[in-house]
Image (cartoon, rainbow, N blue to C red; front, side):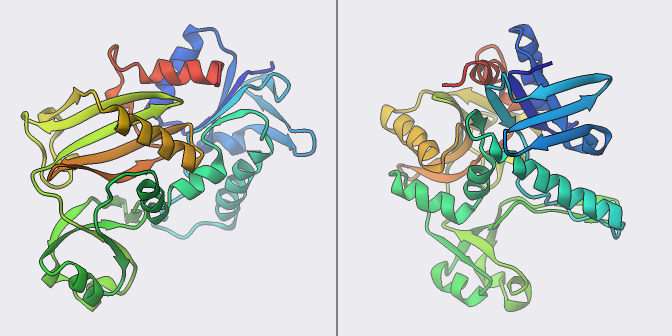
Length: 314
């Protein structure tokens, strides 16, 4: 079998399931590789004449001759820290398979959503903010530091505090994740901040959050509300039954800035978070592998749009 589309994802990725259903509907030949099963495949990469041979489930796939696109639904780094020490074989599996995935960059003549090197750079929040300002977005005042005194100097009263990178760590059988919090900066001290850098940003009050999902040159824009009102703080902490996603038309200038942002970052997919506050539209962040499954519906056909892009990349 010579698939047209290669999907690199996770076994438990619901958004990938949605797109694969759409690929089946339009009759596109694809192969999906889940990182949890890599050691169960028999897979060979030819880096000189880019080609991948995969034996799995009694079938052999020759990835390369007819390949049009690659959907890379993978983080560049595995961020979860194991609670128990890994065996030598487990350490090798984690490091070498991630290196194998990066090695697929040899397929530089096909369309990517998104190219791993571009994902790596776009995941950097400081770089995102720099490029967003360059593209014309209003960006909140920001300080990235492990120095509590510097943060207090820039934000004497309160600030929005968030992690510099996605935090996913294990404590025994528990997985720990961080959200944006609103803090009085007077509570910050060296003992709390010196271990690792954090992001402190201007607190935006009376805000309304926007999520703009971009696939190629197609935008899906929603305003995030709770009981019809904007959410103070991180809306992800609100119970899902109290959250509404209201379709919203954005201005042409904002539309163009969003497309320019992805162009500057070298992405074909991105989930952009914006905030309406104080008469401005503020850029918060862009996620090159952002989630969107819960937004997918007939009026927002994100899954089918991704499938069509993979089948006929522009």
